[in-house]
Length: 409
Image (cartoon, rainbow, N blue to C red; front, top):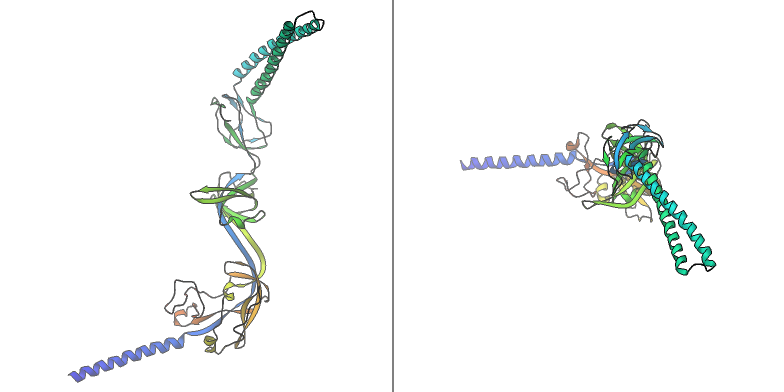
C-alpha cells in the first residue's frame, strides 16, 4: 500500500514538471523579438494653450446722465439700431427750466449792479486823480466795483452750468450701433448725486466681436499677439469660430490663489451668431509649423543593446558613438547591421519632433524593439525589456506596458 502511494506521488511530480517545462518552452519559442521601424514623414507641428473667456463687442458705450430727475420719454428699446446724435430719451425738464429762469434773473441783477459800480468807479477815479475826493471814498468805489464784477462773472458761470444740465436732460446716442441693454423705464427716477447712472448700453458693431480670455500664468509666456485662435461656444456646439490674439494685457487677476492674465482675441461675426456675454472655450495656437519633416520623439530615446540584438543576429556598429553638440542620434538598419546617424532637430510637439537636417522624407529609422507572441496576437505589442519607460503600469517582466509603438502620428 505504501509502495503504491509513493508511485502515484512520483508520477504526479513528473507530470507537473513536464507541464511547467512545456509552458516555459512554448512561451519562449512564441515570444519573438523584432525591430520596429518607422518612416520620417511630413506633418504639421502645433502646440496650443486652452482657456475660457467671454464674448464682448469691440466698442461698447454705457450711456448715462449727469442730472437727477424723472425719465419722461424713451424712444428706443432693446436691439434698436441707433445713429450718432439720435434722440433716445428725455428727462423731465420742468425743474431744470425753472432753475434756468431763476439763474437768468440773478444774472440780470448782477449785470445791472456791475454796470452801475463800473460807472461809479470810473467817476471816482477821475475825481480822485483831480484830488477832489478822499482816499477812503476812492477805495470804497474800487471795492464795490471789484465785488460787483466778481459776482457777475460767477453768475455767468452758473448760467453755463444750468444750460448744460438742461442739455443733459436730452439724451442722445454717442455712437452708431445697437442698443444691447436698457436699464430704465419711463417715469423712473434716476439720481446722479454720487455716480452717473447707466441708462443704456450701446454696442458699436456686432459683426466685429472680441473674446476676453483668462490665460493661466503657466501658459501666458507662450501667448503672443498675432497667434491664431479657435474657439467654441455652448450656443453653437457644432461651430468653430476663428480669431487672432490682438492684445496680451499685463495686469494679473488673482482668484482663489489662481493667477490669470487677460488676452484679447478678435472674432469676425458676419452671421451675428456670437452674442455679448457668451462663454467661449478658447484654443490659442502658440506654435504652428506646417509641412515639416518629423519623427517620433521615441526614436531619439532608442539605445540599442548589442548583446540582446546579437541574439536576433543583428550587429550594432559603433555603439559608443559620441554625439556632436547640437545633434541627436537615431539608428538605421542596413541589412543585419544597425548604424548610428546624427540629425539636427527643431521644435517638438507632443510625441513628435521636427528634423531640420540629416534625414529625408520616407527614410526608415528604428523606433523600438518589441516582443510579439500569443499575448499580442491581436495586433498588440510589448515594449522591449531593454528600453527605459516611465514608472508605474509595469508588466510582470518589469517592462513599461504602455507602448503602442506604431510610430504613426
